[in-house]
Length: 102
Image (tube, rainbow, N blue to C red; front, side, top):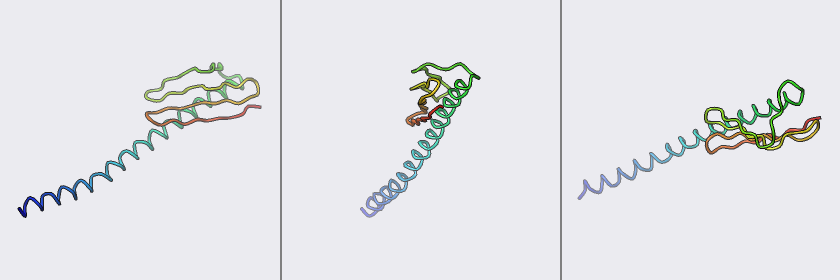
């Protein structure tokens, strides 16, 4: 009976020790995905800024670019002067960059 109780206590201790490690792993994964989503959005903003100054072709509203596991979505494309909005996605993370052209 004592062995069964000790085994039950040990299993609870082990389960309690494993859970924080799993939570930290999930958090680290989300941090990586968030960083990738930000860089994807930043890349899309650079594409639009280059198009505004005439060094690239301007994407259309709703255009999507897939890069490995990241996605760039051109939500709102600015005219000569206006607001540009680009969204970057990676896994569960999404980052949005909004800028104004003059």
